[in-house]
Amino acid sequence: MNRINRYIIPYIIAMQLFMITGCSRPPQVNPDQIRLVEATWTAVAGKDMKALNEVMKLADTEHQSGRLTDHQWSSFQEIYKSAEAQKWKSAEDSAFEFLHAQGP
Image (cartoon, rainbow, N blue to C red):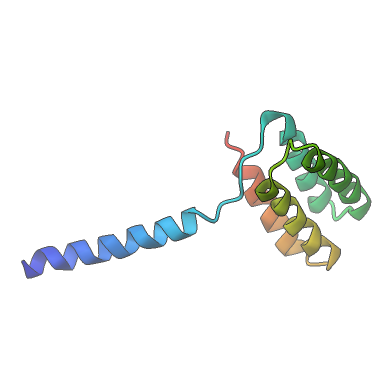
């Protein structure tokens, strides 16, 4: 019994950690909004605030019309706030994760 506990307990802990971190992924957007995620990544990678402002206007329009959920919109906002604060590495990491969350 002691041998089983030695293997099961670390497995349970690992699964709990996986579930906690796995749930914090950025959301997927509808296929029509993938262009916004790609444009966000491009603007952030180029440290182009002007382009990012344009993307945010489009994303806001999508959110106001109900085509982006609050959760999806918050991902755009998180990226924008980092870029606006000149935290480009954080913005780039978030934009990269958001882009990857869209799948292959």
